[in-house]
Image: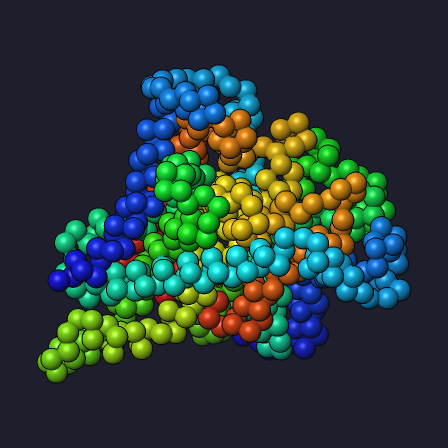
Length: 272
Length: 279
């Protein structure tokens, strides 16, 4: 194909910057003085301030929500990987009885709508006395995280050459050792992508978190943001600041860990 | 032996996915009002009621319009953007970053961002348009405004998939088309589009099932309003389950969403498997 001029590249970048404007506007709003929020134009404020962030940190449940979200996200990822990786290893390399039907069930459950499973899970959490705890959210999030981890990791594990595990077996390595020494290192980049996406999904999850939490003790960031209080009028600046705080992990992932994010995303549905 | 590797995951999945999927069907056959201690079998009573429930049909219509419009716009815009990105040589990382940002944000953040953009007195949209429109409060504008917010956050996903596929098409294919004197339009129509076909189909099905089960964006942005005109099946189900506390009735609506999603998912997995077999 013909090389296109630099101007075209810059035009595409400008277009994409424009596409990000809704979020960038929220960033700017979070830094505007209260009095200038509704005085637009001018688009750019007379000065930038952190006063909204100070309010969010001092007077809202956002700090605790950030801790909750981080904890729930990391524990969900850990649980899904601890249970999912051995299962994926077996599905990919060992004769699992009923493997075909099992895989079908696992893949199908990635499509289950949360609105359908939320009522039984609610009754389960209530019966177990887990309402308003991290445990409820970790378990509920595992319902979509675990099938996702098994599905993708099975694909990655299938690509490990059979000769390697056979060689390991000849050396007397058991199955667990083969998983730890051969398959895990070789699929580590894939696992990193999968773990990253799992964390992102858990961080962003709203329906379960909104249903199973009741107080600050377990409310995650999306719930705290959805319930962000306004007494007489909507505190747009504070909400903007809270939104930016809620966006820190996704933004970091997109900026710093983009390669792993893209790899995981494409592995999820492309078959090349 | 293999069972030891699989068993823990299978047990957890049985408890958290398969079990609830069956249980919700059973719940939907019961009248269950925890507040009043009512719990009795009503067979298909809830479904019979839904068949004549105007609120249900309205929610079904909103869900259909939302899904079709949102997915169609995403595919068109995503494909267009992928084509624009194909030849990109400068700032590719930045481009993908700017693109994926909207996709990676929590749905609640997107809802808050657009709530502020649409704010009638001082929101950026009205300022830029020089208008005084009440986007989320107007019966005609609310659903399109909601769809636009959804397209914003999901189009990047489509664009990324199309872009990734475009990169795998060898340059030789295009050189051959150029040698044959094919116009740009003809090249797109007879070379690019057929090669993108499988990816577009997979993306279409995946996005459709995702749009059918969407909840957070509409729940926070419009809450189903004004006057229920943006209320999807998921929002109606949630309201019934946890605001009017009718667990049986709400579960019946959940089952309807479940069935719709699984119909699309069946087609999706079938296509996925066929493509995998062909690869």
